Image 1: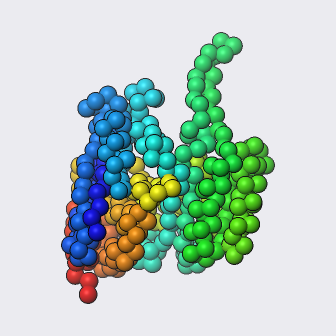
Image 2: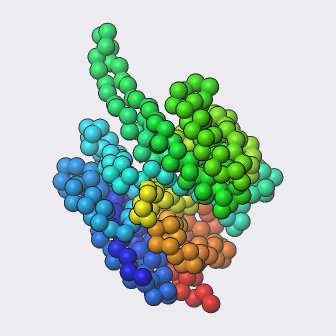
Image 3: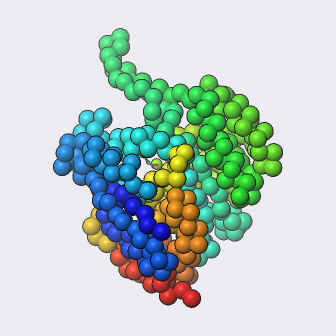
Length: 360
Ligand code: IPM
Ligand code: MG
């Protein structure tokens, strides 16, 4: 198989973690006889520095022409002062919008090797954590109108949150389809006791559920969900929710599984092309010091193999390689226990490549 992958290294630790993910993809190519072409393209703060905008037209074109996109992370304090319309994050949102990637999948699973990194009580962690967050990605308040104006002598800011039926229906279908291949339980998270968008959300989710009678549906308010994730995360299989709730809950979900550094994400639309990235940010405080954990990005590359390229055996092999390295006791700084000596980003990448290549 020959595939072209657009590569956005981005800012902060982005370049280092992407380097290791590419190394792993190359090891997959070698072992399974595929060819991956990489097209590097700038986005985020580095693009602002070079050309004044976070997502240059050329970069967008490169992404739209590729079979998939691999992304590190964008942003950092250096660009905190730039006008909101050219912030690095805007580049990412524009890319998600332009590629019509409405479904963001964030698997939260605790590796048995990392039980001790889980901040929850042992008896809670022991029940297991393995759920999938399905976040609507190109609607809601992120994509509504934003404005700040002078009203009655004071600054007033407005962000509009809206959802239409088709936006809810298509993300609901993704969640139900994925649940069918898992434990067949969907929890739809909303704030239907307060928000109109949530009341519509609930109605359309229920309508869509009728198409999937084998999947059990329940609704949960977002405030309760944030509590339940800590009280008993084993109750969740697939969680489907709108953009902002999903952003917040997925950070919480990542933390209970040990570290935000471990969680990959896939953003998908109608076709097979997707955008794959870790869910963490650019961590400027440790950038360039070989301290970042590349596992989230490497697992994102595995998701690309599975969801965009239809290569489940290859994806499994990458995931197994990660587990074997964890099994052997290697940890990056974010998941190391006190007293354990962490390995750097490059070494972690090397170990995973080796595990992948030496597997019999
Ligand atoms: C994420 C990030 C982004 C988001 C930011 C960088 C715009 O937090 O992917 O979760 O809020 O969607
Ligand atoms: Mg986020």
